[in-house]
Length: 472
Ligand code: AMP
Ligand code: ZN
Image 1 (cartoon, rainbow, N blue to C red):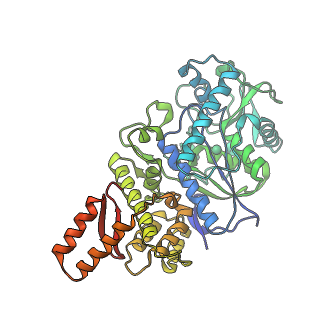
Image 2 (image 1 turned 180 degrees about the vertical axis):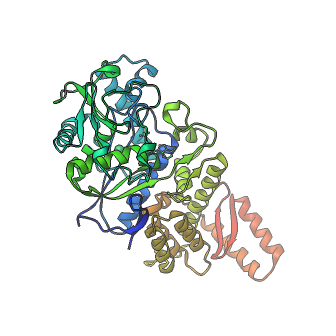
Image 3 (image 1 turned 30 degrees about the horizontal axis):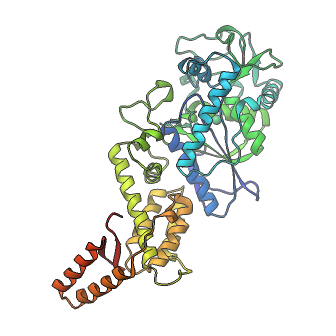
């Protein structure tokens, strides 16, 4: 049975889908004010590993990733400017609704390209926040009616004092959450306690010039970031749903607030399992997009890396462990990926006739066991390498199992380049093998040179001699 770690209960739990037709899974998506950095991409890769594991287990998945195109302020705690609006100045765009739309489109397209390059399965729905304002207003109205929210001159807030389990997800103490009081930005004097968070911002105070706004029962304004995910997950998956994921930075504020909103509105839990991917750490270099300096996938490609080498790097660290990025580590991942692909191509070349209909059952069982234990992909990769090194197994069986594993790994192993070896070279290789078996080393060596003169190399592998082009 598939087990996953639930941040809310702090233990691994068996995953029993709520509905038979699909596992409903929501992941917080990008705020489209800039390119994704490789840290963000690690989170989307984790979610892809999770989805592929569920599908490997025979569970269809409905995967929703939202696009935040309004309301995410510079600090997650509702202070500072709207990230989208702030980006207009950086891009020398005028402060208009049309420019915001262009900005969102540009970075949504870049996001889709990045995830495609990483072989992340496209989400089934990518809803945009600006298309769901009525649904947000419905939840906010419900929260006011249920006594969980209040209106001031500047905003509508969630009253965290009304929700006793507010800090359950993060395990923090409420008094440590002095949200909104820091940063020296405007603090609403009518806020009941610092941890109260905005559901709706009115066009007032520091937000009076917000470019994009909608009518609401509380006047013109725009939604807070947290309410967006509540509205979009409810709209596309329905309450309750199975899995909500994101990076660990979302535990303390964003997801804590989503839980409060959802349950204040719905009256009971709305998400079965909360899962969080640990950070990719770039050491000295800043990772936050708002800091202005970060590494993109394009930077890796510019240095000659295959995007899937980055995928391999992420596969090799468990999603609940920090991953320290370094160029050396990426080189290592690229080399491992290359070796794996070559092996697949070689297995194909070693296959005598047709292909075997069975894989390596013992290794397939161990692979399954690893991924079903909270998506333990580093362990699963270990099983893959062990299988590849096992001299007892036929090449065709290895290739068959690798194709199965690749449904989760997503390394495009089946596309591994293959090559044709001319008959003449094959005959020479067979001749050399006869000399080698007869321990006639000088003759074996002469034939090897003849093979090399034709542009091929012969290597003795546990499964027998393998021939491949020199430059392969
Ligand atoms: P954002 O576009 O900033 O809203 O973040 C998109 C996703 O990336 C969220 O799931 C974040 O939790 C996640 N994230 C942000 N920084 C990192 C990082 N350094 N490593 C891994 N995930 C991150
Ligand atoms: Zn979210």
